[in-house]
Length: 219
Ligand SMILES: Nc1ncnc2c1ncn2[C@@H]1O[C@H](COP(=O)(O)OP(=O)(O)OP(=O)(O)O)[C@@H](O)[C@H]1O
Ligand SMILES: Nc1nc2c(ncn2[C@@H]2O[C@H](COP(=O)(O)O)[C@@H](O)[C@H]2O)c(=O)[nH]1
Image (cartoon, rainbow, N blue to C red; front, side, top):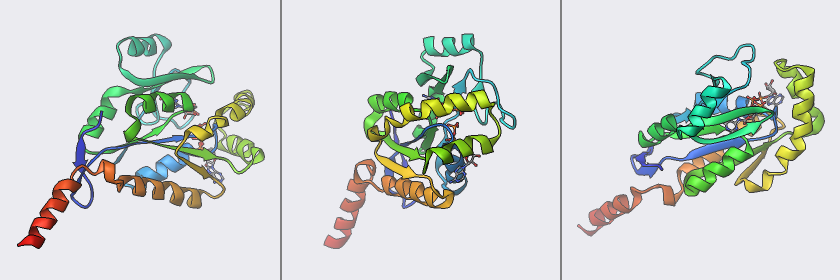
């Protein structure tokens, strides 16, 4: 699915799909925003959803808010790279923006659940990096959902009751980050991205780069 772009050192490499998953409220959105601010060459995948917009959310920036019929058409027309039902709503990743970002040599960041992560991994395993974010405790998770102050008590209860099920998929991920402190968790997530960008298998320009170095040494 991916084609090459140039890394910061000028060596061509395959773009990667960087996935953050967690139980609701563990901090994916917070960490994603920090990554986007500080990591050039990374583009957010904006999902489509049938859920209600929260106060402060912007259509097209946080999500594409669509009705169920439009979402079903997107599924039928193959417009989604993956999709799933989460907390009684439909969520999915529009395919075209991801493909064009990867073709332009950008990495793509996803805030999606375990179902979507499985689907992406089935389609493009070598290009997908999976990071699972855990809260330090159940009490902290509940506190964070309340402190966000964007969901009703009923919605928060539902999300807390699903947290254990969400978490049961942690071992399907490549990296696990415990979000005690947001700056420390961010540093860990950023280190994962930096290291994954340097992986030999992604750096398709290395063969030519090394050949060139060797030819310089032989003259
Ligand atoms: N380490 C932290 N310590 C305290 N509060 C935090 C920490 N990380 C995130 N938060 C706060 O917790 C709340 C939930 O975080 P966030 O919205 O990022 O979670 P999320 O995983 O994206 O949730 P959802 O899956 O529902 O979208 C926010 O108010 C955020 O500011
Ligand atoms: N499989 C997918 N899951 C998605 C997508 N976009 C978001 N999500 C996940 O849904 C829950 C709830 O999100 P919220 O914004 O309503 O709090 C969360 O776990 C997200 O990661 C998607 O496109 N596909």
